[in-house]
Amino acid sequence: MLVAEGLVGGYGGADILKGVSIKVDPGEIVVIIGPNGAGKSTVMKAVFGLVEPRQGRVTFAGADITRLATEQRVRRGMSYVPQERNIFVSLSVHENLEMGAFVRNTVPRAAYDRVYALFPPLAEKRRQAAGELSGGQRQMLAVGRALMVEPKLLMLDEPTAGLSPRAMDEIFACIRAINREGVSLLMVEQNAKRALALAHRGYVLSTGENRFADTGAALLANREVAESFLGGVG
Amino acid sequence: MIEFINNYFLPGLILGSIYALGAIGVSMIYSILRFAHFAHGDLMTFGAYLAYAVVVALGWPPLAALPFALIGTSLTALAIDRFAYRPFRKSRPIVVVIASFGVALMIRAAVMLIWGVQPEPYVTGIQAPLASFEPLRMQEKHLVILGTTIVLVAALHLMLTRTKMGKAMRAMSDDADLARVTGIGTERVVAWTWVVGAVLAAAAGVLTGIDTQIKYTLGWDLLLPLFAAAILGGLGRPYGAILGGYVIGIVEELSSYPLFGDDPLISPGYKTGIAFAVMVLMLIWRPQGLLRGKVL
Image 1 (cartoon, chains in turn purple, green):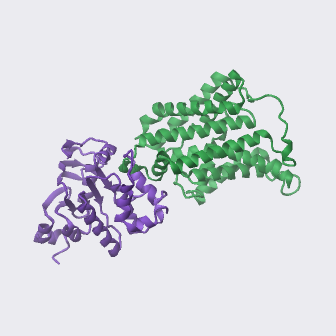
Image 2: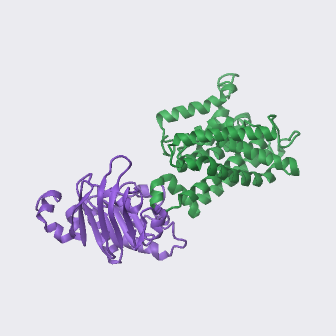
Image 3: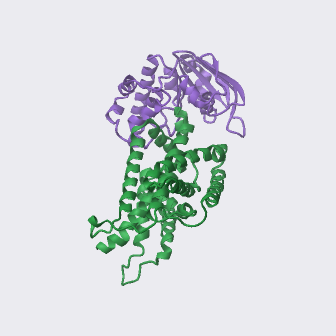
């Protein structure tokens, strides 16, 4: 579904990505892990068109989208949740969802019902300003907002960063539920062990290059990966 | 007390209405397009003169000429954005600020060339105070100004809270990067921001003409209080801009109230200094404004 090949580039100056390739097949959960500065978030941005790669190619559903505007990527069924500042704080919860569906001309009620069913705390607070939500609820809203276009591929950049263990459990459970509905997911995650346990496949990046690529279970079992990237065997 | 209301509070309310309408545009343009629009005052002037042209050509009352001024100013603002600001969308904000300064000079020069430099009233002759409001010395034109402001603010409120585009404007004002990520067509939002800003600015210009008279420096002279009102209310907060406009308008008028003895508190000559003082104090103590807007 998504194929990114040989991405090279960064934000002006030095290249952060030095030839990264990523693939997501329909129905998969794919996780990118790696140390800080490995270029995990930059890969996501390059795939979504927020960073223009100097070299490399991104195709989605068979079409080359390397130079396509972000808005058009959303129209084609990609949705992205940034790590920070991922909700409109001065809009109400419901208005955030409405904005998520901006590219759709008509939005069926079912689209809202689906998000509210997935995240019951949001349903209770639909008229409240999004800025008043707790950390976990903000993350739910950010994911809910991204689901409003009914994406084929949902991209999450560290969805559990800074959350309490309980909120983290909820988010991971929701990710599994979203995937069961047939949505493919590409995510960057600090919480590498839990993310790999959830993922169908994983990529380990380091200094802007692919280091390992395998199924989630195989990466968890890999001694080298465990020692260098998962904080030792445990 | 009635003297106080007639001579200080009521004029403050009228002035505040005009400031509020102008400041909303300044505030929204700042938060959505990320630059201080120095030509905003001159959009007011332009709108005021468009209405004047209709009044002179067709002999209509100024209020009937208002729709022409609103539409004409909106189209002009869209054209200005297309040719003077859009090429700099990805430049640093200061580049667009300077461009808007150039646009301000061009609009003012065009107004001077077309309509001359003499101040002109819309309607000549003396207007009698409305008797039914005694002892309030409220004239018909004051009711027109307050009524028009209320209608426009109500329309703005409905747009911002009930329409998809209005909500998108609030979203983009909140976080432009996230708006792009969400797939919101940011150029369409920008275009509507110009329409809203221009409509309110032109209305403010026409209302100034209805209140007193129009001249080519009308809007330029109001630029400082407009920015002061927008900053006071919190940049990116339309309701804050309205609040800021009324606070500045009323404070400016009250500043010459003879609180102690017979002399005005502050000489009326320093009235415009009040807006400047409010702006400086706000930037020092509460740069996010009363309603927590963006920081300059």
